Length: 215
Image (tube, rainbow, N blue to C red):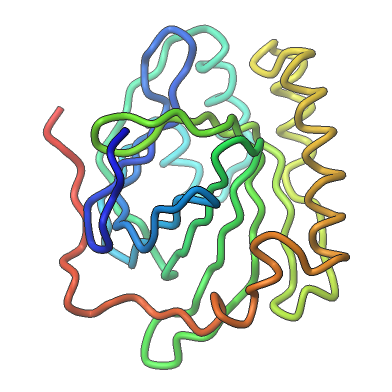
């Protein structure tokens, strides 16, 4: 298994069982240990997203997001080139977890922690240039001080369940992961035991923006 050194390009792919990528995101490694793979990006980092999902991101039309899920269920989608936008991102991915913990920072010059964001997804599968996972729609937004949280995209999660994109096994894993994450926040454990350390993180300005490999 490749161990990523700080500054190495790490490619996160959301990949379906068929092997087709649903999205690709270029990151840079921050740390790679038995506890977690930590990676980051800044505005302008290269991504590839489904065409409809990218259109919905720009328009704010949630119906288009629902249609993108329908394309996913049908196995009929195309990716388009895009860029990461607005925020600096720090991603913490434990090897066996059905989630990643993400910290979103306002862009320079202030660069302060905007919020924590827990993305429920498949456990990591290492690849030669990064890792594969798959986003399971529902998310948890947590305040910088860990004192408040709110669930996000429950409607999309329910839609994905109806379409069969998320099966019963995945649903059970997400339910258990929800409880696990809430317990970690309450106990200030896991990544949240080091919340102050990660909140002080800043993108290394000497790093070029990460790029995806050619298709």
